[in-house]
Image (cartoon, rainbow, N blue to C red; front, side, top):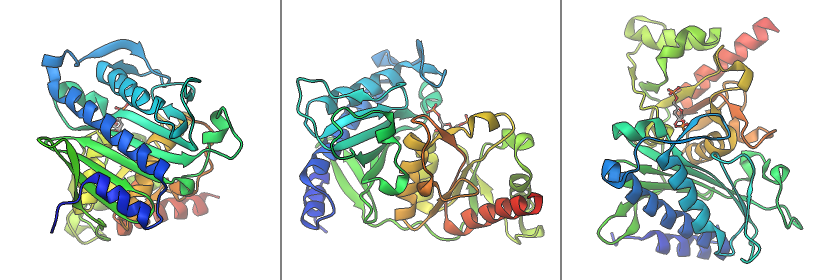
Length: 338
Ligand code: AHG
């Protein structure tokens, strides 16, 4: 089969009527920015990019130098192309307008510039996650409320994993596709078209150290997995937890599995750990387009009406069979206690 570059793929998608020229340009620009982030992350200590930046982000978390660098790379790359009305980043409190000197487009870009940044200093995979929405008509200077659209309205979503290889996984709502960065040529090349996540799995990802804080249905579900062949599920399960959502999701997109960041007593007041607009929505779109499922344990993530740019939600996603069992346990418990 002849190799297909990201640019060729985008042209095919335009011809198929799945995207327009502006969205195609937007994805090219994001992919180019991510190549620069890949270069920065790969320098490690030699590039002086490890460690804390000495600042906190909007979530009150200590920013790593690479969080700040990656955010700047994405903002700078997207400012002048004329394809965006505004950007929003997990690292910034408010949306970033497009400077007046540049033309504006009809799209809104949201991103988590460097997800899993606690892993940078220990040389474990990190990633970038992004989501694209249409800017509401007649809005010239988008405000927070213009970004608060349910995930079903995403026009595109993707992530880039900076691992042993740099990979881009992308959806426009017509399947999920993977591209591998050819470092010599400098191009993302199509490596898997129409990825399918197996419906059943024997592998789950969760931070078990939070077990004692989980809600009762989560305790029940995971204890049944841990009971293995001898328990009610009648089979053994394996566990993995990278603590970089991109890496954990990429494993699921590659060989199946299920990922949970459930609600727990420590994070109940903030609604969850992961951010709806920067993490849950784009990953849910990618996973659903690959045949998987994504819920909060109660509702389909993509149907949530966002209430804030930095809103957090519980996340259950991956192989449909396991997401459905865990979600059913939560719904049954809610009915029993109603
Ligand atoms: P951040 O972008 O702040 O580094 O957050 C990482 C996220 C996500 O990538 C990962 O799945 C999760 O936080 C890990 O959380 P724990 O450290 O609680 O396991």
